[in-house]
Amino acid sequence: MAHWTVTFQDAPEMAKIRGDRQRREAHIAFVRANPQLQICGAMAMRPMQDFPGAIWNVEAAARDEVERLILRDPYYVASLRRYKITSWAKVPVSHKADKAET
Image 1 (cartoon, rainbow, N blue to C red):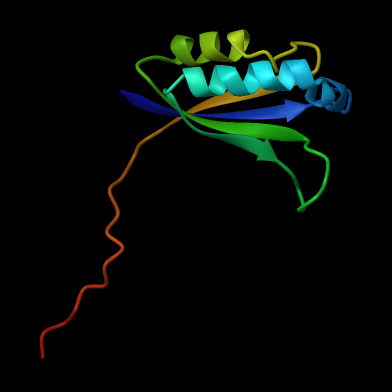
Image 2: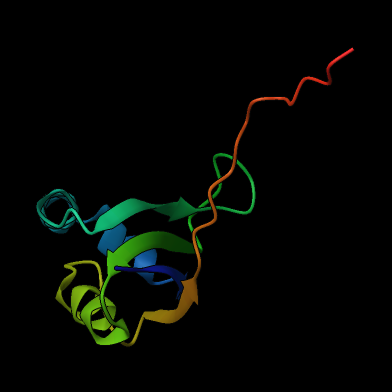
């Protein structure tokens, strides 16, 4: 599986879509039903600010699978939400400090 990041940029009118409770519940159900969405969330430039976009980390075999997910998301409205899909490589990182022998 490949790793992908999707960065969404929303038009100001997207706030109305986010404020629709029924659509928000459908979006949350969609996210929970798609385990390939590893990490998802709204982005803000500062805490407690309106959301100008969102970000997803997705595990999928191909870019077209990621795009199909985007197009099925209840929050996706083509006229209000642009997106960019980027592939990235996962690198294992050790968080343990190496101890020098003395």
